[in-house]
Image (cartoon, rainbow, N blue to C red; front, side, top):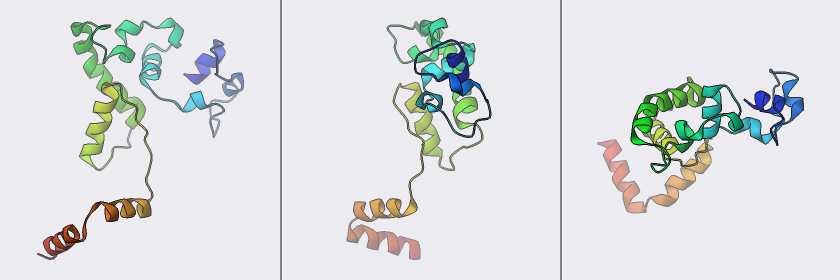
Length: 143
């Protein structure tokens, strides 16, 4: 979609990005952003200036803009769009993370998909449990 936006002269999309579709790195920040508007642009195969916001995913969580019938009809399309365009084959092994991702995107929350270093995770876990809790966990594991 960044290539299509660059070809149509949309602001902040670099024309240099249209030279090679297989560029190993993004030329502009906008090429890396995936939000509800981007999902609408992918579905409509058009730029954001030529799509109807009231019938798309960008207004999904706004009941005053989108009527209930349109909202209900978009739910399966929304789930399919997230699955095909964001997750692809990279499902998290943790069910809760997948559920949170879908609920956050469908509820207009901002989501950052990234990885946390294991050392930082250990530090966070170490600071969140008291010594008594750790002893209880240790006893439970031994049992």
